[in-house]
Image (cartoon, rainbow over all chains, first blue to last red; front, side, top):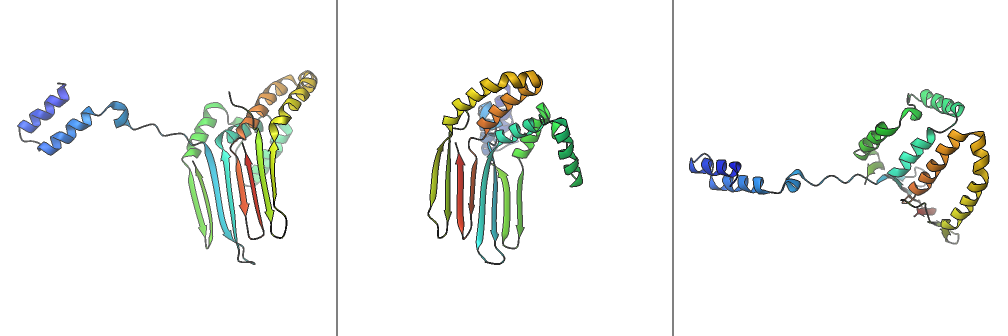
Length: 138
Length: 85
């Protein structure tokens, strides 16, 4: 009998806990470590964009459903870093004009993986009247 | 090792038009691309060795990464679906 089990039985004998509580505590310490830690979350594989909107003139629905593999995002960012310098400058200038001070060429290695990890937890839902946009990972 | 995309399915349906359903065997292009690479690579390596040696593997990874891409657009007039495997 391990010390934790002994401690629980002592507490039960002293009346500090009920039999039901003792049972739960014993189950918790006897549960295998992997089960109690929980199975590791599966990393998302795809980026999904769903758009449902109603055409204002024709009053008919439009649906867009796009699934992009995460690997494509990684490859795209790495490929963007290989663009010629003058092209990168033009792209960065265009992004700065739109208020995005972001340089893809500097995003590599562990930082890229961290960005992908954080994107994997992102979930965006936008509703405007009858139009909805959902962006999430699966 | 991941393999590049092999097949693409494209379905286009516009109201009043005949349905178009295409099954594209992209895997046929890979031997041709490899042949082209063998011919062009020495020249590119002479002109820009660093960029070429970095670009070719990334292009291959991009071709592999496209697998699983799905695009579906539907409205009252048309229905377009593209699947890449």
